[in-house]
Length: 167
Image 1 (cartoon, rainbow, N blue to C red):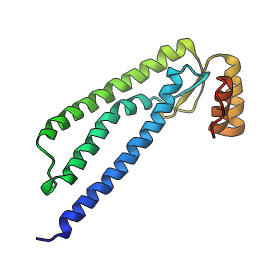
Image 2 (image 1 turned 45 degrees about the vertical axis):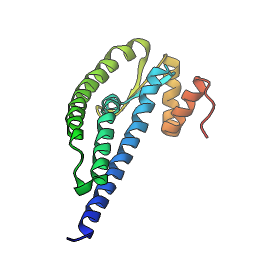
Image 3 (image 1 turned 180 degrees about the vertical axis):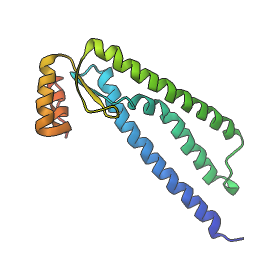
Image 4 (image 1 turned 90 degrees about the vertical axis):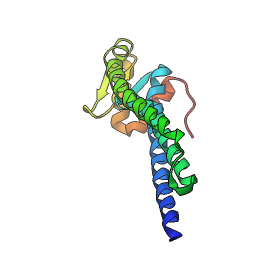
């Protein structure tokens, strides 16, 4: 029996889990900013339609990382049998979350953000859309975006909502 083969397999799985975990964390950071802008009713809201499905899909990704971690820690690189039922449930939840999240983000773009906010700026179908509470804020946002980019828009949003600047 070659001792290095199980160790290599475990290391490959651990490296894959590290990349997937970083991807999950990055997806969380991106999605939570968009969603919290809506929840907190900020003056300027940036919404990317992909944020809601990604956020709803995160528990499935976390379960897969847990599943493979159990496989690495088990004997013979086989996860425990009771985890397979959870794998099927996580896969079903992930599919439902993607479909419902996509529908929810379309409805959110059409109805709630269109009633409380005005459309301010958008780049294309796969980009996010900026919404503002009124026309004057929209004009300020457009000027800030042209002069300083996204960072200037975030600073303007913090200033309008009386939030101390980020360090």
